[in-house]
Length: 151
Image 1: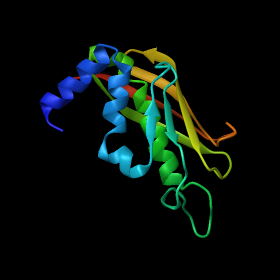
Image 2: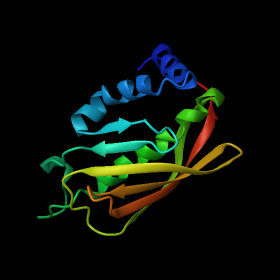
Image 3: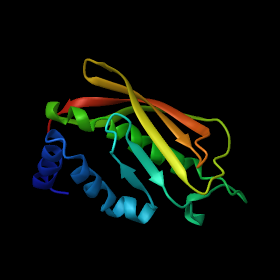
């Protein structure tokens, strides 16, 4: 991505064009190849979704559970989405992420919901819940974003 594209993406967020942001993310090679999509219908509680858990999402030796690295990627993406409403101040980036694995994520679908908890100085703090299709929390993450990053 070049600087012009990055400025266009930032402006899309500043304009609060959440459908445009969804299209940008959901058409990206990273999300398409990972079987992941985002939903910004409620920008204050963005969603990251795996509609159908595939074999490449699973991990460990002989397990049907979603791999911990996939869970970490989903948590990082979800917490990062909390920064979109702050793009007028500059870009954002994950500065801290703590993941707590509660139980194996045995699921046919994964739902990840992020929620901002506190904004203090140049940090945005949030919580992310990683759930199966029954919306049972199997893992959660807390983290922070740095905001106001110049590009």
